[in-house]
Length: 279
Ligand code: C2E
Ligand code: CA
Ligand code: CA
Ligand code: CA
Image (cartoon, rainbow, N blue to C red; front, top):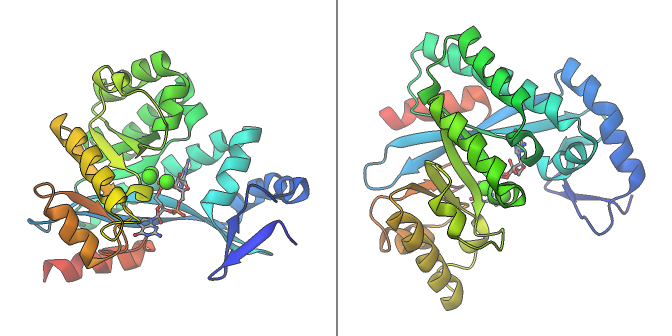
């Protein structure tokens, strides 16, 4: 199959060559995937350097397909967004993460905040509000423990409704992070109007740092802008000591999410990882 690209045994997407038949198969298989537990969540910590505090964890979706093996969410989420199945899958994600959170609370696992990715078309729907309300109530979860990650692209796609939706989430006590910041080629004026709590600077700004002078200057500029807005700034995709050194030389106590601290982990591994840090 020329449409399917493997990297480290994981299927990755090439938008230029993906085929109709592969998409159709994904759409067909997704219902079964929920029932047969082919879908599962992994968890990637966010760490504040300086204090070393684990300030959050992002829940990320995985699909262990019975024929294709592990498929990256970068492959199947865009397909599910196109055909509307993403709504059901997101409900499943929310339910699964809330159940996990309530389990961690029962077990005394300490974490500050868990982030859930909300796809663009779902952000402004009223169904999402009721799913969140009901889920929080059902599992007895304090809304301050939950953060929603919404992409900059989806916000600028429908700015007025996004501002309203984010306002409602904040009224519920939820945090809201603006994901993939800097990739939306947008004017920045909406930042004054949207009541987000966190900005996540996209990995693409980190990749060339510190070797590329231009990339380093751009990361510095974008980080300085974001931190002057008095928002939590999370820098994504940090992999190396050199990148950490550059970033800590640039702002105080940044929040970092990246392989430098940990890749996304299965639930059990994540709890182990937390325990080991406490020692
Ligand atoms: P994202 O929301 O920007 O998530 C961060 C991605 O960067 C994750 O990829 C994570 O594994 C990866 N990452 C984090 N640190 C590093 C690093 O240091 N190096 C490298 N190379 N990668 C790093 P992942 O899990 O493959 O997810 C890809 C995208 O799929 C996510 O990007 C998000 O847009 C989407 N996605 C994942 N889970 C969900 C979900 O539950 N719902 C929705 N709607 N989208 C999801
Ligand atoms: Ca995210
Ligand atoms: Ca991101
Ligand atoms: Ca991303």
